Image (tube, rainbow, N blue to C red):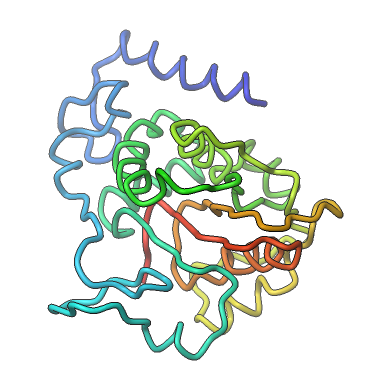
Length: 246
C-alpha cells in the first residue's frame, strides 16, 4: 500500500511537468508540486491558531485572556488526553484541502498540509521524551474504501522529524461508526465510546504518546484513542491535529 501511495505522489509531481501548474483549491493561480498545488493566495487565507485557547482541548477564544484556563466543556468532562492542539482553523483553504485529501485521495496536497501543520507541532513537541506517535485508526472497511488512512500518513510526517516510531499496532477500530460531522458533542462521544479497543495485550508503563488526526472538533474520537493508551499504562497522551473545528 505504501509503495502505491508513494507512486501516486510521484505521479502527481510528474503530471505537474506535463500540465499547467494550477492551484487545486481555487483553480486560479500558479502552484507547483512542491507547494502541494496550493497557491500563495490560498495559503495566505489559512488562519493559524494563536492567542488565547483552552489549555486542555485547544479551543480558541477571542479576547485578551492572559492566564491558562479550561473551557466549560473540558472543565465538566473527564478527558484521557492531557492536552489537544491544532495548527490552523478548519475553514477556507485548509478545510477544502483536508476534505480533498481525505475523501478524494488528493495526496498531492500533502506538502501543503505539512507546511501549515508541522512547524507549529514541532515547536510544541520537540525536545520532550515522547515514546511514539499513534494515528487514529480507521475501520478496515473504511480504509479499504479510501485506500489509505489519512491519519497514518500525517503521523509519518510528524514522527519523522521527531525521530519517533509510528505505532499502528496499539489501538484498533472495531466498530465502523457514522460520520461525526453533523453530530452534537454528546452524540459524537456516544458514537465513538465503544468504537476502539486495544490491538494487542501490550502494556505501556511510563510511556508518553502523541495521537494524530486530521481535524479535532469535540475531541471525542481522539479522547477515545487516548483512553485505550491510558488503560494500557501510558503516563501521558497528547493530541495534535492539522486543524481545529468548532
